[in-house]
Length: 331
Image (tube, rainbow, N blue to C red):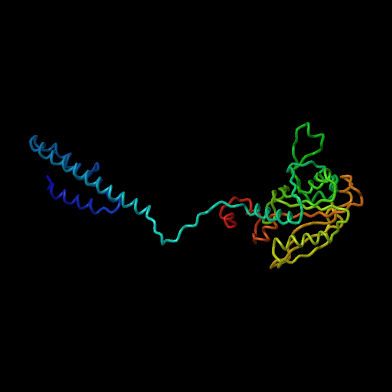
């Protein structure tokens, strides 16, 4: 048989020198595992005589108990050391920034827009995203077969039988239907904005989405002119972008205004189209039975376009990807 004293010494040194729990486990397997040194010696007892087997068996079992005891002690020491390493706190070490939740950039700019217009005595009105064809098109001077309907690629809805008597339904293509609904229930003068989501059947690219957000504005009174519109929009743009913003007004066409204008802005680079606007068309006032001498202006702009200009975002699809690496930049 091997020299048990030498075996005890070598095993004790190996256990004491183990620096990690994995290294200690390797020592345990080498001596006490199925093919370990001590296990092989115990298997060899069958080759001895009965008297020798009794003596050697007692010594080997005592040695096994000794190994198990010092291995358990060493495992405890290493576990405590590992725990201290994990939970050790160094007050001089720079901390890790905790990521907290934040509002989506579109929610943030929506709040900014509401705050600016409320400060100018505008009321905030919201409406349904499912709309009747009459309010989305007909009452806004876009009758059936009007070529202007091609400007709004529409999602049409299947509705229950009892709703079909009200005409066709759709996902609103702009927030302008709330102009009609509000004017049906209120008399001038008033000034409102209508924020909300709109839907258009468009191919996705860096500047187009089938689901996006708009803010509609409407001001109606007996003496409202484009001068009022110019003052309000210039005030809004300066508060949103800063006094360095440049803007210009260009003639344009929209079926529900006459005359129509486009508003462009410029911060550092080139001019960017921001919103469409104009004086409310008399046929829109006819649809809500207003005095033909009434005047008003309307405007509409996309929140995504505003955010892309304000934060220099190159792709509209980033707003809807749900990637926290994008949204964390606005916390």
